[in-house]
Image (cartoon, rainbow, N blue to C red; front, side, top):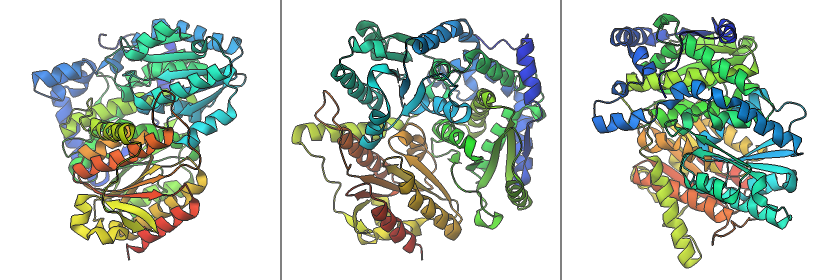
Length: 587
């Protein structure tokens, strides 16, 4: 694909651009001189023009690395590339609706599922269209919860995987194939569609087995940059949204952030410069503040920013889902971005942001004029993150540490196939009466008997990450949220939360490859009821446990301070006891 055509936007694109104009602002605070310096340098070096011209030299001087980067810049032109296929996407969605499907279940992980999750949360499903569900978890309760709400014969399963070989969606697909066969649906493949790259095992399988349809995405669009491609637009159409309108919102943001735009009014350049300047000066905790209708976009930003910048010991740490506090609850390692829709922040939020600005923190505000404009926000953040990579001197299009946890999980699954059990992680400690294991780095600092004192390892500039292999149950989230509140209040450190194994495909890269400032709590639990994975010796519960243990091993081998607590079941009181014991260790 060539560079995006920004010379003659349509009247509708210009209309959307007018509606986006003036809805972004950046207050640099103490970072203002550094941000201005980066913008001056980028203007001198024509960095934005180089980005839109797809010049890999912006991120590396090594020919071999440049060749790999060149094969990851298709997202810059995906809004042009996808235009001729939009009528086909719409026909497919109309056919699913006309054929009486009442549910759609997207089976995917990371970049294959997060943009559709944002669209569902922000824009919703249009009346008269099938109910839309996401499954991006190997937790048996999550799989069973989907089983409980769908009518299997009238459900379309959308299997989305760039590589086509990701273990989680393939395990989910095996489960629902078996469910279709048990329900007497023949051929079962007529209830499946796929989104993948050309020539993958999933592409071949979809063709050979007769899936209802298969959408082949360009290989030069990376997963976390794939929102404005088949990975985002096919699910959007199945929710009843006008994919062409979403593309035009995206093209409007490309127009507003293009190479002819003055950098002082280019929101992507301003945001990217703030992220890079912040990380370079110790303000590397990018704190996303949203009203409840926009909370899901924080998950998408998590993946994009963390996986793109968190490597070579550097990176921006996105912080989402943390309640906005008073200025004195934060260290001097933050920048803030407030996102709103159809209006600015409420009075309480605005007052707190002003207090943070008065304390020297940088913050930005971005307002979406309507839900469909989230497509423009995708583009703003993609451009800003690529530019932040220039400012940080990192390649934002690779993920060199992601494979570590995958390999560790596969080793554990091989052991399970051979022996029928997962190996022990070593001599355990106890936290809240639950078995717990400390990483070698944490043991050096504390000693094995001091697992409850994990949080005493937090120092100014660190962050605390809770990584939960648990069902998405609000009752289980309550003690976790309370622990996050206590940790920030007592240490002024940032806190993050991610469900496993979803975070492995997003912030997992940052955890191992970014700055060694994280303190990690991995929580897993024996399932109340397990679900087999058809064709495998292991169940979803075993797979989930292997992923939790594999990531803990990966954190350990990366020299991170980490604790793994394993509960006998996903029980709220047991989790409260664990969180209370850890909070007590802060005193």
